[in-house]
Amino acid sequence: MRLLALLVVSVTLTALVVAGCAKTPEPKVTATTPATNPEPQAPAEPASTEQVRLDVMDWETTRALVQHHSGKVVIMDLWATYCPPCMAEFPNLVHLHRTYPGRVACISVSTDYDGLDEKPVEAHRERVMKFLTKQQATFQNILLSTDTETLFAQKVTQQSIPIVFVFDRQGQLQGEFPDPKNPDEFTYRTHIFPLVEKLLAAP
Image: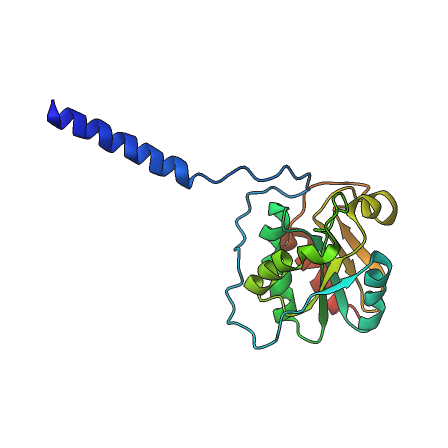
């Protein structure tokens, strides 16, 4: 009987430990990419000596940044720390930045500020910077001051993140993912990498 009691206690403790390690459910996010993604969660390349920066801008100012990168293919990625699919794909943006230095300009745009509470946009800086630093995102990073309700209702045709815009070297929009006319799931490797290579090869 003593052995049986010890076995019962052992099984009970094991169950409690397992339950304690269970991940709490992620907030529901409407996105075009599955939350489970085989892409790495952090870049495998060596750490960069460049500093990670984060600037606060509204959507109009952010959109105008494309014109500052004339002669380069520009990738603008709209994401948020509450969006698992966004974070799963983010290392691919870092990969493009490191693979095509001087030829591709990467711009990440955090939409963490939703404007639904009294917190100012700056209240989201620490959380966003923590993720960007982990990803070694040493390109241009924006914390959007335009709230998400206004963004999706008035500024972009998509209704949820992740969203990726790809511009050619003349600053013309050549691809947006998901495509508003055909909003299928997308990934960097399947859709964005081939488009970037095509635009870089164009005369």
